[in-house]
Length: 233
Ligand code: NDP
Image 1 (cartoon, rainbow, N blue to C red):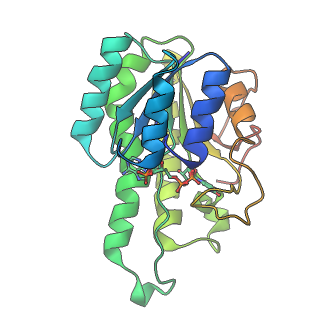
Image 2: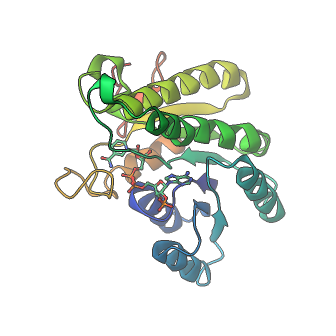
């Protein structure tokens, strides 16, 4: 499969790149800054395998998404999978009276509008793919029934991401494009912290089985955990 992944230089994104390479896929790895240490490591890895193509992609910058699309087109006429993984969890005051509205705007820009920009521009490539999928990496913090956890901007932006997934699923069903919003579990990454339950490699197997459609997500909401179990919307 030809797979495009955002936020590929660390955390879950990096784990998904490594899993995809092990499984023999061609990975287009979107990295915000190529000069970061981990970005440089991916570029080094790119020199050892033609399965990996590293692209500069800031999901808040529509031009960089368009540029990535041109690069992908130059390598391949189609994509089979888009994984919208890039995300941000900004620290904000928990009281609404103290809430930083600019942090809310930034959270939506990355967590909700980022995937929207990517899908807007890469959908034509996906439509030429084989059994294509869009995977939006969401969070249980985006569950309306879990509104007591997490902070305002993160929870709101992930709930809106889930709505994007549901709407896309309805509009792309006819074209057999699978759309999923996935809660990957609490992961030991910069975002999840070192006390988290799971190594970021752990959810990757379930995620890849869903991409291969070996785990079938039953009708209704597209919001699932990394094993394909339904999440509360
Ligand atoms: P990390 O904070 O470890 O990594 C975040 C990644 O997103 C980095 O690669 C970062 O790039 C990238 N990123 C942030 N902003 C942008 C941007 N504007 N453009 C492109 N890339 C960007 O997070 P995780 O790996 O833990 O999280 C991955 C996903 O999983 C996120 O969507 C998160 O919300 C979700 N998630 C994580 C959980 C956890 O416990 N960790 C739990 C539930 C969901 P850079 O290095 O340039 O900053």
